[in-house]
Length: 446
Image (cartoon, rainbow, N blue to C red; front, side, top):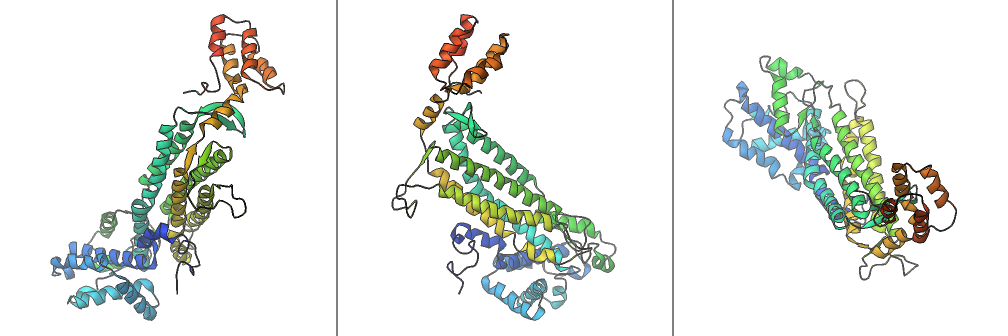
């Protein structure tokens, strides 16, 4: 029996509780339900043209037809899978399931023949899958990402005036402000989220080889391209045209690349916070009973950021394969996209697992201002940039070289060393006072 302890994938095992909502979008049950939804909405759209043979269909039944997918149950999904044992074709099984439902509702079988009328399975799959991704991103993925983003915004505001020694190339550098460093991640994430919201979720809807052959031969006077455009738009998607038998996936690949960029930013965040914890800039709130190390009782490990980094890496490996593989298909269609599409939920799940870990880890941070102050006080050499820039302004000879000679002696550069140096300069007293006001705590820019 499948349980969290027997599941092969940690997404459905150890981490299932955190991503259970994705079952509504990416499970086999969800895929079948989305297929039923597209088929039903397509049939209703045909009635709305109306096709001559559907003019007498009772429009009052539209609500009942929509209930087929709105009230779709596990028993219904099992019934589709039972039909598939005979058809050996998953989409054809959906068609037969819907026709069976029509019969149960007393709908004339002549109307039932317009279920899946003129379509190939990819018209259904290449509409169902992007629709499920669109709704999963908006309803499951973004809410958790916003949780991380809001925490970062809070820290950016709360710590906006906290000076911090910067480290470029791992070495002490011109001071910054802790809040500003968090605000960098806020800006990066907001830009990528903005781009994600502007992405077009593509759908292919055009018959066996993308030319609406069957539709056109049956009803040559109908503008089927316009119909297809409107139908796909009614689902919140954008029709790709022209296509082969399948969606060409270029825009879907762009979405995966966008999601991957968000994860790259968060990997950067996880590593930076991990480093700040190791530098003692942050302590971590301790949860009673929690063990940091099985051998070393004193340790409180930054496991949430490590867990996030690992899951983001797994997610990006799959996103990368999706965006590289899906747009490539032999001639009008090969089947390599089919099994790959079934894995879209995997990187989304690993991303959300990471978001939850980041939110948890960020929530544990306790600022250690004493350590930040100590590092600034121990690195007076970092004001050299500001001092030599003022000397440049004043036309002082060789200011860069002068400060370089001062700060690279190998001796400790203290406040006293800097003060004595400034007082020895051949500049006006007002300039000296200006330079003496520069400290590691105040030299933080704008």
